[in-house]
Length: 312
Image (cartoon, rainbow, N blue to C red):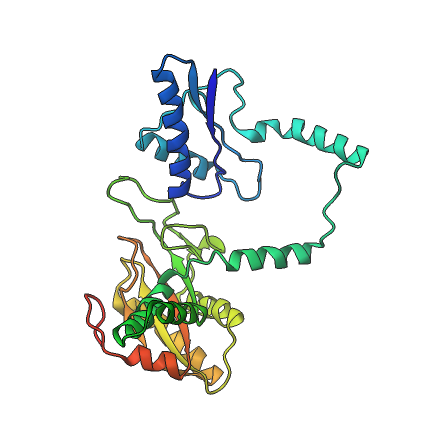
């Protein structure tokens, strides 16, 4: 019996890389079965991370695999020989063996303090930041360098410099519906919002009841300035971006708070942008992006540009 397995962790959406892995496993099982060999494609949900795993993510992964036509022979819903296709059902077994390893001295408790672990997680998460609308600045500044005749290495340097100079955060009130999927990317209550959510619905910092616009903008600026403190005299470009359904008049309410906070910090705003620059279909919400400028980046920012949503 040939068995191939796909074992995703339900801590978010099914990504392209995961779908590719599932496809290869599914194809191999089908190929062997087509040659007359007993073969099965097994789906197992690795939900042992009880802090980050959610039932909503698990259900989304199952639905996405079914939409892709990657139906499994054993696993959740369809069952199978073991009927333990959510690994959380085996936690007692894992804990038993872990205790045996600890008693034999073959395993040890993590020595890092909670503060050290938090610092390590923060460093790792920094490398995975999505940037929300921060990509707009990277595109604009790298594009200006390319238009000026810079070679690929130089354009790459400018793009990375722009990304390093950007801090961005979003807040969402409703999901979007991708046409081919035909369903919302996530669910959220009519009286709820999520701070820090990504443009594709990636989990944010917190989810809770709706708050006043000034309070939301203030917290977003707290996050941004806490991660990229500004000194008096710094020059900063600001982008207040609609995630789709939020209209300009509401974006300007947020911009008023942003401008006041930057003025209090002694920073000068350069070429502020308010509007729809990086959207997620009909999602209601907004993002705030700061790009700290030096002479090089500011010159590239002011360079002429002509595209569908931005003309300089």
